[in-house]
Image (cartoon, rainbow, N blue to C red; front, side, top):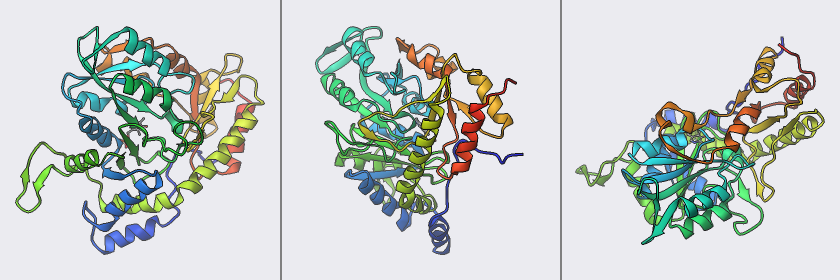
Length: 389
Ligand SMILES: *Cc1c(COP(=O)(O)O)cnc(C)c1O
């Protein structure tokens, strides 16, 4: 029996144990302690932005990001339908409503449809984008850099500035991805919009067990994010509070892991690129299968690999997943469309077409940064010789 090859698991072989041990020995295990501030500084340095505010996970980071963009109850927010549901749920936490956009062939938000929607389905007056259907103010959009790819930020930022929309970059999957050419050359995913959010969940490229980070180049916004994530205290000693805050700050234990992980991030990306290229070249030779590209103008972080299945391949999506499971290889379909989920059945959608197609034809295959070349070759070999179940 071959060993089990998981989809995406943590890789904790650097200084994790040393830093965690230090946190335990010094008894700084909660939200105080030196590692939290240090990790914030190091993440901000790594992505070249003004500052970073840690949080408990990506979801809480997105919850705060919407608030620092002044999204309030009854506002509307444009979101993608093809992504993980945590990109959208925080819109509902606030009492605002999502409007679901389609993806393009990069699996990220279709900028053409976004523009079309703003032009044809809305009215722009008094600096506000108003949805014709609901008469509500569309204040922001959440753009997700799916699988470590980059959404078309040039177009999206142009549209956002034209219609006065705040841009929340859900870069939870894309820490390390940056533009290598164009207007935003050198800019990292998460640092182009109004505010960006990273996740350090266990399956992400960099993990703190659970954790997240808010980044921005706007000092006021960062201050407010820190305030909201730390219970909105206006006085530390007397415990006075000027608004409703949250207990969202990261702990020193999480940050200890994060610092050790960040030291290895570029090495992780190198391994992921190597395995991506290997999969891509070999799978290219298999009729009916290919690995989806990342954008040309970026250095991706290669977080997840998307295997695209044409009808000519012997197995369809579900059969591939089942077949690989019998070979001890974990593969997964991408997420069910968010606009199809029970809590969002009544939500507005705009021309969702491609997302459905990709949902039916894409599976993710093992991509951990500790995946060995032998593991990758075994996966490829199994795909070369499909067996009908
Ligand atoms: C992982 C992820 C999140 C949520 O991050 P958590 O840290 O798990 O809360 C949000 N959006 C997307 C697209 C993600 O992949």
